[in-house]
Image (cartoon, rainbow, N blue to C red; front, side):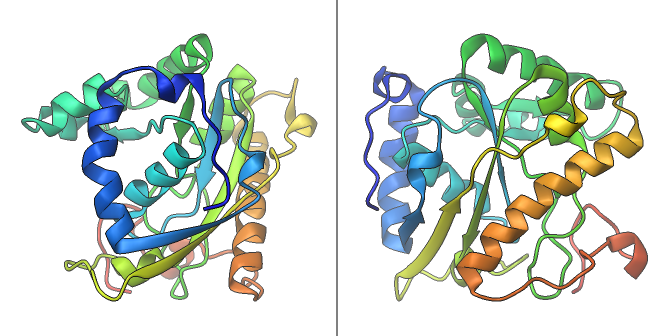
Length: 251
């Protein structure tokens, strides 16, 4: 990976050092990362990093890339994971954000997390698709509005990022990691998504849907560059194919 930039956030001792010591060697065994335009990742300040999502091991791979680019990765994670022994401790100590998928906390937790991210000048990694893509060829599907709402309400820039190759490590909903041979994962970082057209507007469903489409367009364009092919149009919509948008599915 050509980009090596020290960052004060990463240089301070923290539980991330323990996580890095555990995860980075395993990640290096699984894959080599080829990053394009890594310098576009801001070195400081609050931001939303918005990747595509097609494998359950994606967060590990994007976390490694974020670390290598000098930023400490923080995700919106299922609240239930925080109750798992040991794992829950690491999640809490590393500043991951618990989000309930049901009940009153589902809407409030991400917004409260956004304010803390702003105050601390950190980044949060949000998958706008909300779950693994249902698209049969692993192109990004229709996005959900959480990332757009967070960005517009709190004026946080959205940095799109796309990756390709993780499916060779662990296929979508696969149960077995492929360790050998070592895989190559291509990653491309984009410019901040231009959401200026939506600033000052009511954040109703129409506005948030338009802003989300802009984010998904940026992610898809990066993936088109990595795959050297064009994504199908229109973008895959699970509702139009009688698919659930959460949980596993046969695809």
